[in-house]
Length: 176
Length: 320
Image (cartoon, rainbow over all chains, first blue to last red; front, side):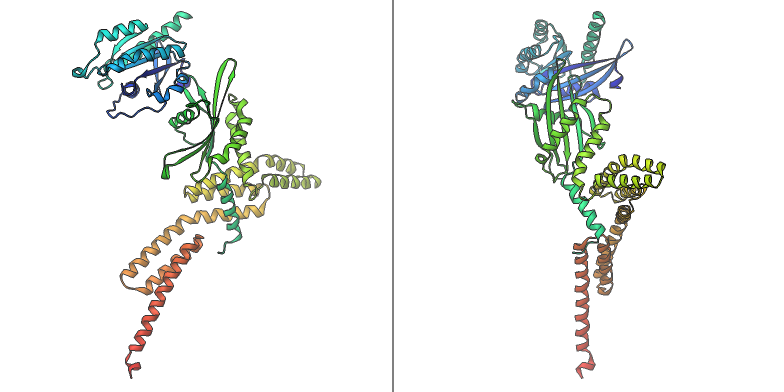
């Protein structure tokens, strides 16, 4: 299927360790949720084909390890990215603060400046620390769209990828 | 220990192949969008994309980048040993990155394959995007690895023999036959090496019937080029391999029967079963087990003899 796609795009998923990057990807590509935290080694690549206006578009989603030890090779993983998903944990303030660092890392190593900021684990209402308006303000500063998601319930996950795919498609259509 | 001539040759092939016979050669291209992409592999095997990513990272995680690496993943029976070579260069302004990977057997030392990887890179680097790359990889893999089994199967020697025979046919005016033989000289020797490698892999996986079939196919190819001596040897190997599962099954049954007989304290019957198991072991060329079962049978026979003698001494006739 991948070979027959009309468009092939690369979307990188970045953010602090254990904010839910892998589970978000798992939710979107396989409709699954994993409770157990298994740190990603380097990067994990998943693919999903979506149809936009009759065109087959292949989304190559790169779940990139958040650990510091992989910082050397991360720039290689950023190469050719069409969009970034920066994820933070709504119950973890540090991960929110570090989102800016992730944004700088992405924008300095990638040709693209398009992406979304995601506040994940919105289902954990009682433990929530980061307010919605903080997320919206930071996303605005980055020039990104802001979403709040739950990889556990699936809330907004589909919308994030759908937004990214249609926006990339529109920008290609407009440039034609 | 006695081994028939054909078995000696067979073991020689196995030993030589075993010393220098990687399980597969895999060539990966680093695609900015898709990640590691398998461009070619030989033989056709399943290759885990996660493993490809791990190998790529092992090369690139440190500065300066490691060109050659000896890697091991997993432990025990799941151990995967790898010899890997990484190259990167700019082509039309785009950075190209390739991995040449040799998947090895657990007993092999990856460092011993670095030279071979270097040769693979030299021969294949400029052909990475060619549509014929898989065919090229197959041929080069066979060529490079087959030189290691030349003691037992010399491609060149066979090719020369075929060409020599063709010349004789030409002298006899058999032009068509000679042409047909020459065309076979180009393909049959390398095909035989390929079959021997597949047979070796099948033996390692204890798939003896499949291994036997590969030898049978090699034997038939040898017949096509009138190489009857080697053909006969491979045919015998094939027959022998195909019998292994049956012989093993029978031996297992004999041992079980011997143990049952021992439990019934029927030593005579146990001796018969152990002797039969020893015979099967010899047919399997399992000398160690053959000796073990023979010794057990002899020990039981000695025990019975001692019993008989003891009974004789205790009999009323002797007492008188």
